Image (tube, rainbow, N blue to C red; front, side, top):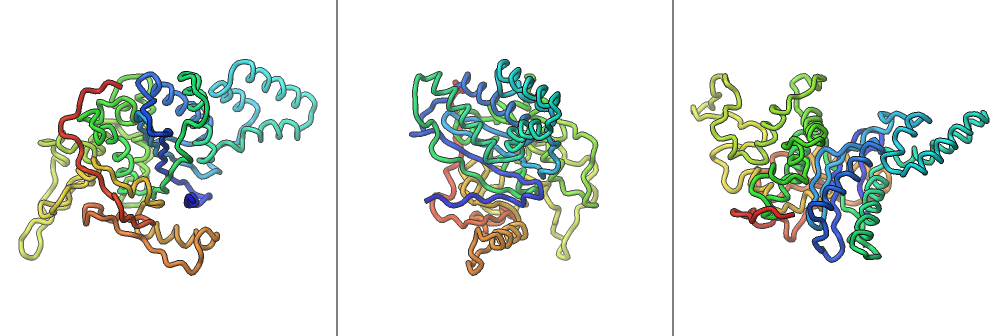
Length: 372
């Protein structure tokens, strides 16, 4: 029996890492299919009011980092906005039928009729489960027609992890997703894989701006500012990319200064240097074992099966809320679980402590050429 899905506070903005795999783990998605999957994803994203921060389509599964905004932040549908959104998902005949129904309802003066028509589509917006259900259904219809098959395409329901909207959590999960093709040995550089958020953002196609916006906005929203405010001016992509590459591929930044005038290096009472490394860099030379960027290039089950990922405070807050709603028995002993691997994870914790196959082997050193 599968565990109940954990959702965030419905009155606040929430982030989720979602994963789903095809049955029998067959390789079904190649270049053309991945392009269609991305088109379906982007259309549903716009229709639903959710935002895909980054994504990765592999040969037999996909990863998404999705923001579900506070429901009050999604403008309710009216007749005009619905007619504008319908062509994203429906054919011309359906759009014309709904348009005529809306016009007839308005002319009749029957407001409840128009409200019922709008509600038919309104309930599908701002809902993660409906968003993933429709995405997987539309992909299933496309693939079954393309392959001449019938039956279930997906291996059960999608998995999801509630992710805290903080810098360490969001940046690590986003990088983990964009590094999937590197882990699989398809490419040596994440930007070379065009069916991912970072790969699309690094290109010059028509979707690059949208992909850059997703990565830029989560970076802006998670950026820890001294006065607890978030700047309103757009981030420059070169700045976003530089910061993100510290997790994705720090070797490409060798010789690039983080600060042209870093100031004096703070020292301890013993005179030893105590300069703090920038976010995403290896914490310090004294650390033993793999760095954070190196760990993110391995399979890390916490990101897919940890249920909740964030700081101890976020995990404990989530546990308290789940107990208050009955999703966790009030007498159950639950606490934030440390991630194996030591200090490399910083303050990151999960709800579930995993024991088996927690980490995969290091990424391939010499990946084959990308063919799909």
